Amino acid sequence: MFNLKVINEIKCSFPANSRNEGLARSLVSAFSAQLDPTAGEIGEIKTAVSEAVTNCIVHGYRGCANGNIELVGRILEDNVLYIKIRDKGCGIADVKQAMEPLYTSAPEEERAGLGFAVMESFMDRVSVKSSLNKGTSVIMTRKIPPASERQE
Image 1: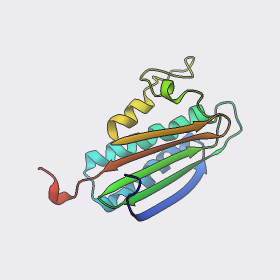
Image 2: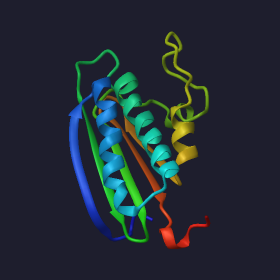
Image 3: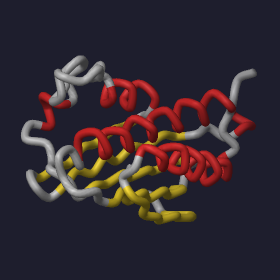
Image 4: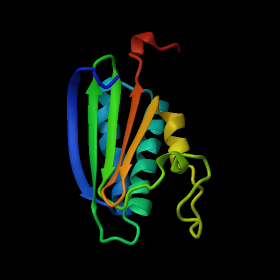
């Protein structure tokens, strides 16, 4: 899927501040509109992006000076939406464990530990790469069927 031709791309960086979660949602929503997604598809994509950005803020930069979040959006051939959310925070020691539903690295907080599970439920593919003290990248893809192929 990652060998597909890039049709269009957006790149941006913003401070890892909870006020910017809405910015990320809006950017991805506006960018993905090129694929003519349904309102439901847009809602699911925005939720997946929210979870990834929130993970950067809450976990990636925990106890660190504020950092930046990088967002890359791509429209790939075959109506595939590619989204990469990256931080340069503390990283994840065990990605497989972190992706288990209900696992959280912050049990003292009121966090459910469902962020990756939510991303996986709303996107076709979720890939997480992380290095301690270097950061984490979450890559999500979703094929948006053309309107002419949708069942109404």
